[in-house]
Image 1 (spheres, rainbow, N blue to C red):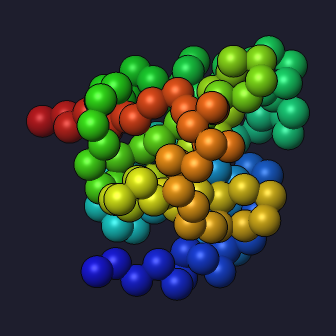
Image 2 (image 1 turned 180 degrees about the horizontal axis):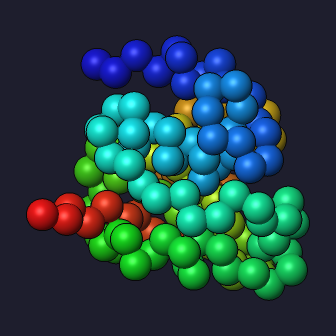
Length: 132
């Protein structure tokens, strides 16, 4: 079983990419590298804190081409969520049994994507494409 404790101590920092602080995109990048050895490219860390509410679709524009959307998630797939404007603006890593780990304003937390608050925002599950 994976020890999540080191991740759960990470605070939220907009644009952060490490254990000293991260945002949801940085957390996904960090987790994938540390746990699976997958180095997701960091295409742009200079985005505005309110990017998704300004109509910018940062995740779609920069990352969707690197992932396949899947109907049934496996452990360590990425789960993505939309805001009220329909922009995909949040994500985390699936842990199985409906649980996921993500970084939000409260820092890194484990939650359940089957809860109504997450279900109404659920965009889908994504698996990193293996490049040979």
